[in-house]
Image (cartoon, rainbow, N blue to C red):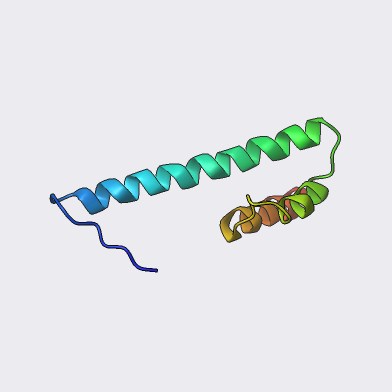
Length: 74
């Protein structure tokens, strides 16, 4: 899939800003959810396994979640 941003000068930068904000909010939500799971006594690896079965599963979230899990084990 390919997309082109047209129109005024700077629209591509604005689009990038919007998409980066969405990615940041998504990753912050992942961190908050994992912290909540931990406080609730749930195993974070179990949360990730269930997450993989949902419509929320995407490579970015799964990779970041697995990275956080491996860092917390160390």
